[in-house]
Image 1 (cartoon, helix red, strand yellow):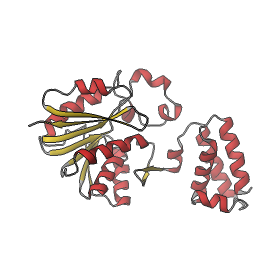
Image 2 (tube, helix red, strand yellow):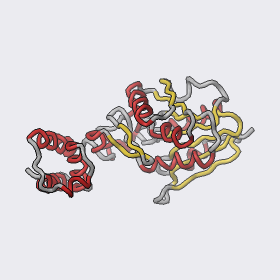
Image 3 (cartoon, rainbow, N blue to C red):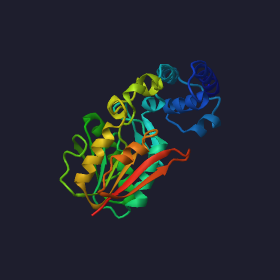
Image 4 (spheres, rainbow, N blue to C red):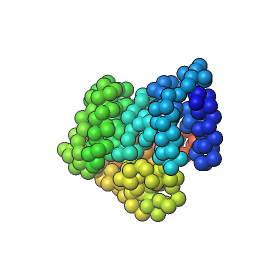
Amino acid sequence: MTVQKALEQASRLLEEGAVGVPRLTAEVLLCHVLKCERPYLYSHPEQELSDLAWLHFGRALHERLQGKPTQYITRRQEFYGREFLVTPEVLIPRPETEHVVETALAVAPEASRILDVGCGSGAIAVTLSLELNRPVWATDISLPALTVAAENARRLGAAVHLAACDVTSAVAGRSLDLLVSNPPYVPLEEEAGLQREIRDYEPRLALFSGLTGLDMYRRLADDAGRVLRPGGWLVVELGFKTAGPVRQMLDERWAEVRVVPDLAGFDRVLAARLGA
């Protein structure tokens, strides 16, 4: 079985299994098995796969056909130009979440005390630490998630300090310049309609936030008012059509509120500055 034939067969299987972008998925999985980059596949189409490589490729294809996300098979996901370790213990970082980083860098470039709440893989915390060249703190209630975040910080050389706690319960009052978060925001009532890759494989703790999807936003709004210094910023990713309800959670203490759209034009990030 050559590289070319393996890709042709795998692409056909994935297409028949209604897996999105079947050819690209086949290429990514074969690169994972062969420990190579995609250009190698096209420069060595006649290379024969070893029996062991064919076995591992078949197993990876089977997992993907069962719905397991490609990122959990390869344990890799790019975020803000860097490669992160991902496991089923953490949410897979999405390109949309890069808008959280961009907004944080824009509104609070001088922030020195930064906290990422519900850090998961550590994608936001690690990226901010590296982009700003300063320490960042991060919390998560999930110990397995914190293990992944610690490994990503180590691999990428980021100064990220981790704490296991619920939201900001480990943080002293009025000590932060910037609080960022990509909180869970999927309503429980929408669970049945989610893609199986999300519903059956990504951690529920990082996905769902009550019946309406707004529970964690309420907690973040309350906690941010307690832990941010005057003039500090709250920056959060928004779920679909949550900009209005989240705005309403911010009382008169907030001096400035901005909503930032993503590339598709949807409200993606809310940034709010705490007044004096």
